[in-house]
Image 1 (spheres, protein in one colour):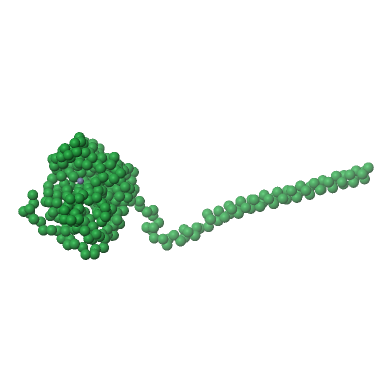
Image 2 (cartoon, rainbow, N blue to C red; image 1 turned 90 degrees about the vertical axis):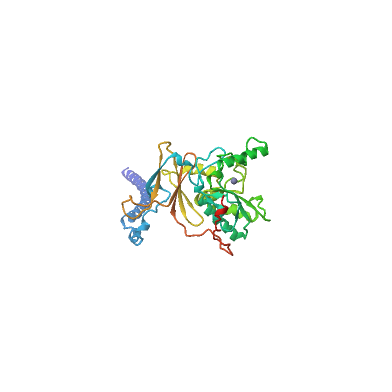
Length: 383
Ligand SMILES: [Zn+2]
């Protein structure tokens, strides 16, 4: 029995050993698998640790990079990049500047007198004509007109454009308006503004006529060679003020002969975004001293920053102007960037400053340019 038992026990043991061997094999396999997984994890961790503890080779190389390249680049549209000086403006100033918005619903708040105006006949070059000595413009619009027409002549060889109209008094505009109503029989006009509501009161506007036969009896409509003026005027600071498709905003029918001076950076934005002045004046309100500046690069490579400051009302409004860094900590004597402030003729001011002057030229290569000297003024003929 014992023997039976023994072999039986032995057999039992044998069976046990068999199970044990299987168990050991399974355990071995599990251990092998776990250790493989662990080694994978550890090897990963080891690599990480290596990266952290071994001095980063990138850090060792960085001293070769100049210090100014290590600092973050300044964003010139961010007001935190600047220190400021300020001017105080009252609402009496809202009607001054190149960006005044005047239309059938917005009366011109500014005043323009003869002292503020150039007689175009006395200042113009020979690349174009002018109707008579009554045609007057603000000097800034006058200079831009001369440059634009000289380049137009250079490109096309045509000196057949005439400035038919510039500054108009309120009384004269009202006469034009009443004449228009009489001739149409209507009680309002989509072509002629009433007195006080015409852009021509600003001294920043020209109407062109053209002549192919010596008679300047056709309005410029921007076709053929003359299309160059409509396409390129923004480079000189002018815009087609009443473009087709914007009638519901401008309240005036398409007038391809009517050009308004707003300044090169603003004309460039309006050109880039296809905005009429109503849209642009609204758009620019998105850019303020607290939200950041609008940056525009003009065709000559100059970079301008633009922002809006709303009016505070009767108490006056503080308008901040960035000053240029001069390398020391005392900002009290720093000069402001070259800047302009214009009222919008409604509820605030637009500040424009030249952040960086470009080195390019917008003028086409001359091939036989006309005489660019100013015609001698004829004081006796002045009216
Ligand atoms: Zn006009």
